[in-house]
Length: 508
View 1: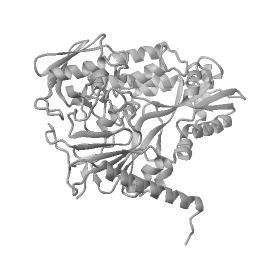
View 2: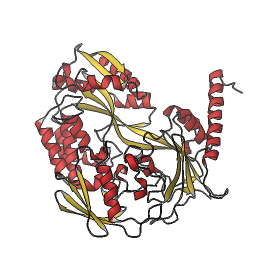
View 3: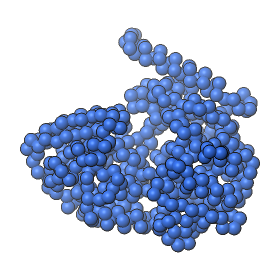
View 4: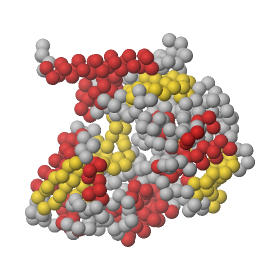
């Protein structure tokens, strides 16, 4: 029998100790009044709350993933709005939208959902300082329209109002949630199938089934959440059955876990090589083409991500299921044929930057350096923490920069990302890219309502950006979600808005 190496023994003992400690935490955290034989869902989450679970921050996505707070609309897989607390909506004109409200909805504190409270909840978000991210640059007004509808008004024409209202940061809460001093507490104040009954700071949260939920009642009696930032501990919790649902299993831990407990979910996040189109060697389109031609994406995916990522065909990955189909259109293919021909690098010196905050990126940089040098470039690498390198990247001080970038923001739409990164006035334009044809394509896409025509326009803009080699998409990331053998119907959501639903429950 093989004898484990000392460091392997230490790792096993450490993970076992972590699992035991986490098991004790789950047992202590279940302070609800349910009977001891009730089957509750145990969830180990990656990050603790940063803002006391206020829905006006990114903590809102936890409330959404626990199905305790709800929005007027939700998004389907294509990013189109579907009914939730609102059953129907209509655009009255470019700046006004009317939303009809679902009848018979109760907040967790027993008060009814009314037009007045919906308006008050959205107004509180619009007036918050800082605003929820989804409302950056948006002036939003809300008024009641009879007893069962609200009218949402924007300062400028906005075809994406329904998509904006799907953001968990615009969850509708009871009046009791809004405390003096601008504090918003979601405890006992949402409308979902689970009521948040307690939250222990950055340690845990407890949710119970809400008997008066307007929709399908929760299959489980409750949810017990522990925040477990350590990846080894999260993996141990899944492996030992301490947790039923585990967020973000590290790639390095996957081999120690049974394959049927692991589920890979494509993320709307692309690792991209941005090329400086304004100054230095990559100001020449033919040199950018040489860099693009040198990249071996499959090698990066296999060596850095152990095959647990998707090779990029464009800026938008499989988390947006419509994108691949749009790339088959003749116009898209013809646009890419206009790329410049690659020129020999002939010893051109380039400065390649990235950051340490995402563990894989320095390894990606090593692989890219080898590939670029094989094509004739001479590469100087610079790797720092993100907070110390972002300003230089945005100022164009690198010839090339590797970035892991979210391609859809809270509205579920990639136009904002493309404007930010690839328009002449883009606020995150690392490529220093400015092209009037691309700007026109982005403006056209932004003005079209959500749906097939908008998606086609987005694809056209992507093709133009890629045709200029302003950026070389490398791969699309996946998140590895763990689910125990006894759990059923856990949501696997690329946007990370859903996790536990009414259908999620314990087998048997």
